[in-house]
Image (cartoon, rainbow over all chains, first blue to last red; front, side):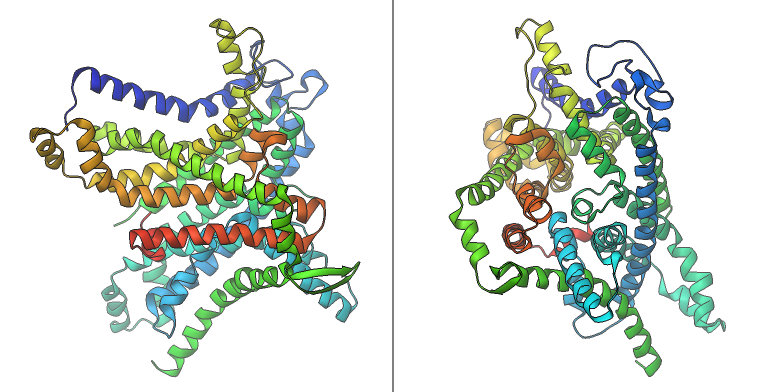
Length: 280
Length: 287
């Protein structure tokens, strides 16, 4: 397959256009974060950092907007428990699938992937309805209010974890499968206890995958929209806040937060890639 | 396995059971039960299929469903056509560092939030946006052109969102294509089109099917891109589910809609796996 001349030029031109298409939306988001105008669109009215740090046109920049900063904090507040929960359950799942034999294992290993093929909106509404049904029953029985079972951040955390656990299971499981069990047996033969083997042999081996899974889970939680939309109460995580702003017609502050988000994502994704590539 | 072994297996089993039981299976069963409860009076419900009947009787509901499914097919086909030449280039034409660079570059935009990518398209497509301005500057348009809030904008945004999930399975499938086969085909007098149709595309088929399933599934489940770029004209089924659940607070009706979407999505995944003879476990464990 060696196309030559015009054919190759056209093919390369297409690939170049393809990458232009891929990056055009991201580039315009970044560029218009610095536009000294009330709207994130042409014409270009000059360079400014006001949409990051100032009070342009009587509106707020990212760092001067309490609502926006609140949304970022809410997202972080949600993403940390989601990531911890996902890595915890995912690691237990990985050990269960890789190390244990039990009846129904083949079925369970498929069932653990179901959440990835169920649309996020469906996960959201089913958990919303189920939690409400339980809350209604329990509130009548106990005669108290169970606010954490109503739309709000606790439900958002559970809803996001419902499918992010599957991803953590895949990441940790892939690493555990590569473990050379003779190392573990050697340690046991040399008199180490099971707990000590776990701490000194297995955990150091798994650490890159655990860190990688945590970062991926954090990122997926931070960026999740579909499931979150159905479960959110009065506190909006960043994607929900951005969605609201974008429907109303936003100022370039939304570009500024997006650009910061892209940079932070790059650092996190890079960290995840480095962590999961550090393989022997 | 000794008693201690059995106990520790049971303990490892608990998190999985709680997770799948309480967050996946029980909610879906409950949603199923909700979808077959019809309202008798303000706070009285009985078993019945009225919610599903409403779905088929109200044209706007089943039309939204059919439109979403049809639109997703178009998006999937368009994504395949757009991604294929690039996938073939990365798999067979690019070499060494260039290949690594192209592959990595194609991954980058998809680490970025869907909302950010959609914001980019809104800036490009809106009436006062970049493309409208470019068209006027080139003299191709008098006055501003609104490119946002229509089917075309939705198509662009959804294809963009699906590209990565098409590109990777295509590259994986094309990677193993033996170039000698292509040359043999050409030497034996086949035209480039014949070689494409008879050798390259059949070889890429597992990747084409896998990518198409994922893109279709992601598209029918999409919310933000479709609604933001389509605006009031989007008529998107996830929006209909949202309206029933959050705006109208008619949960049984929303649950019935949810099951229609889940059914469509599941049938498609199952069909695709059957067609390619792959299992869910294998296709997800090798991303």
